Amino acid sequence: MKKICLSVSLLLGLLRMGQAQEAPAYTKRKLQIQEINLVSSYYEQGGNNSAVTGGIGSEFLRDYAQSFDLVLKTTDHRNRQHTIAFDFNVDHYTSASSDKIDPLTISSASRSDTHIYPSISWNVHDENRRVTKGISVAYSTEYDYKSYGVSVNFSKLSVDNNRELTLKAGAFFDTWTVILPAELRPEGYGSGADGDRDPVDHKPRNSYNASFSLSQVINKRLQAFFTVEPAFQQGLLSTPFHRIYFNDGSETVERLPGSRMKLPVGLRLHYFWGDRVILRTFYRYYLDNWGMKAHTISLETPIKLTSFVSLSPFFRFSNQTAVRYFAPYGTHAPTDRYYTSDYDISGFHSQFFGTGLRLAPPGGILGIRNWQSVELRYGHYARSAGLGMQANSLTLLAKFK
Amino acid sequence: MMKRFFTVLLPSAVLLATGLTGCVTVKEYQKSRVNDAEMELSARKSEKFEQNFYLYREGAAGANGGKSGGGCGCN
Image (cartoon, chains in turn brown, purple):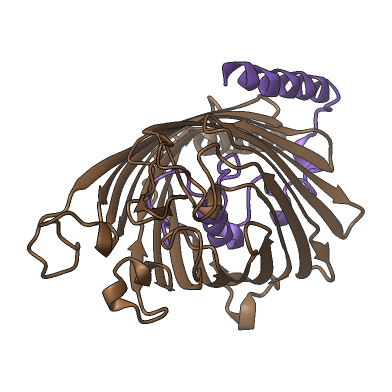
């Protein structure tokens, strides 16, 4: 009997302890680093259809890009997860075509600029309601261009965690410093160069976009993502230093409509084939009210050579029709309402292929536990527009957790 | 534009709805493959700058993550 009483009281004591542990006691949790990503990239392109010189001339460009993103996480007293992400990006480029804005300074690919674009986002995930809400702000600055952006997002996860619906909306408020080609500047109009006191114009370009996305786990090996992202732009959508040479020999700057509506629709299907191969497929259909239609398809197949080394060959193909305002050098009529000789919005097909190598050893890279993975990626890009354009890109990603 | 919008969107929605009916409920413990880092349903982090040059060198953009506005890229 004594033993029974002792056992019961012990059991009750344990139950009480258990209840005390189950009670939703609030403990202050510090903001913790969840992930850090460092991305370095080198990009080089060549071609001879520069829009700065009216659709002819060198497009040679080199770009060095660096990105640092930091993701912090914490949990509040209502057990909601807060994620704060800082993203800081810098591009530094040298461009042969930008050098031709002012012929007096022609000196091959010496013209350079630095593009800085940081952003901060804050997301709150409520596990009980399966809802995530977030907001982000972005800034971008270049020599002749500034941009301020804000976006909000909302996601709802299904009860079985297999389906998620996401809505996003964003707005970017940009300002151009209108730098004109030297020979087309009116009397008293500035060059935009540091130290030049003559005034230059500033023009707005605003972009508004929304996205409706659905992700779905279809079975143990297959998942899909479908998205529609309508976007609207208004303001100065032409580039003020892009030259146009008409069929009568006269010259002016590019002129495009003041608004553009875009509608891309994307579908992703990712399939885990066997134990070692993943098929990542993507298709996008795009159309806009300037007359462009495009199809883009890509396939990447990460192959797990070992449990921590994977090789990812990839291929991307894209085909687009020209906007209705495009014509090559010297073929636009001066009576045309809009005109551009920018081959980026001409009709062409492009191919991008290459491979990535990813290492993610269990003990960390070089034995550093927090250095989770490293990825090296090389790709070659070829575009059929005009005389053709070639580019190469090399990217290195280091992930810390 | 609106007509084209619906000719794109309606078949996509029908295709998606048909596809979703073939879905099975996958439990958390059955998700070892779909939770693999390489299975993430977005562009890879290492594609970040590639997406920027697509945006600058091609007219079509969006529906694949990456920059959707802000910044010029006019070089």
